[in-house]
Image (tube, rainbow, N blue to C red; front, side, top):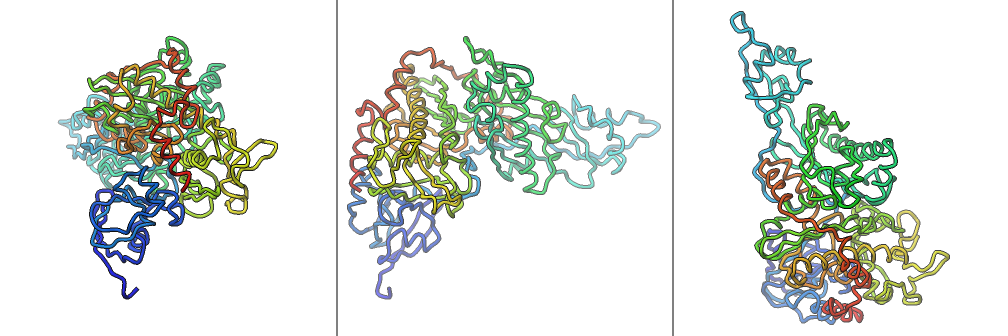
Length: 625
């Protein structure tokens, strides 16, 4: 080591610049890790997974290994595997991203455009002149004049007089737009909080914000308690339609889920739910309808009229949401019965509406939604039923993207699995992004064929029992639960149906827009597991089109980020309404070509290999790795 040469290495990552010393006797990956820069690496430096790839900006490096030459055909000539390469001179590199780890990765991050903080909830301190024999105005009228308020919440009346006199008419006024909603003694500055919620069919995510500073204070996620009434929106609509009790049960289930999230968030910062005055919810039209108490039945029948598309504003006490009873619950505006406020929020968060090129947004979740923006400024949108498998629900070893879930995986030519577990430690199961990567690598290694059939005898990890064939990712003695983690034939079929629906919807919509897939200059990926999606694996599976990877952009949870923007900014609220009015919804179930495209898309990656020509070549290249 004493004779080894050292070089200055500049590392660019996530907008930051770091300068370290690189020992040329060590791999680049080892140098990065020793300097505290964490890089994805599943295979232990064997050059199998491609996760540790870095972009070379300048410098001299060791010659490419065979593994690097094969990955170079996939990643590009300027990319090198850090586990395989050594630094031989002063150099500069760029990381695609650093490994992320957290205990709740269901959409615990996202892209939120900078917004001018201007929430509807505001706080103002006033010192009133006390009443006198010459000024006998009522306490309420005195306050309203000082606040410049045109309305007030009647719940302020019982304690109004006492609150004024406790601090000699020195009080904080809490306003929601032009309505006076709370009056608090000025002895202590109040904490004023808001919550942004993504109501997904399978999962619900909530962010807590300080409305005075705009600071994010925490995030929590849970399965939507409505799942017990049906895994998809149609089954829940049918359940709700049977009687009023069922409809109320669905409303109660989602409200209880949100209340549990709010309680966890408030507890985390040692706050009280009464300090929350505003909640903005984004979700598909059926989910927001259930929240309000409408069964959305007529929206599921031709001509598919939704109960509402405008932004709804309801007092929290009228819904049973456990925040300050004077506060409000608002919904993001929606577009149609099947293209909801979550997509409006996605568009707002991603900036799709501001793109000057041909672009698309793909929201991956239980319901897959596609939005196309054409070069002439038109917006077309459609929804398809993908099912909950992409979110880890309804598959044998599936789970939410929380601690213990396998989120990324590589399989070698012997069938051995190399994986990363959220939070570290032994795995409990596998989440959506891990399932996509697992089946993609099963296809690369020939463990599943183009039809999606698991090939018996393809490797030692493929086993058969009374339930059919399955591929064992983690043997029972290596998992935390003591049960094996596996992908079954049924799991593969569920993922095939989900990915076929998404790809067929994208193809159909581009045809209606009279553009080709390869003309898409930008594709934003949002939704339940799109946050951590490996683009290459998604292309191998046939979820996403065969276009250059640099055209894709991971938005994260666009729904909750858009809801956050609406919560924090009146301007963004107005912009969301404008977006909702500019998008034309397309009903795929009345388009014959959609079903034809769906059938072709069930193959892996597709029945027409010419549509995935580059991907097929990459698969062939990796099979010998």
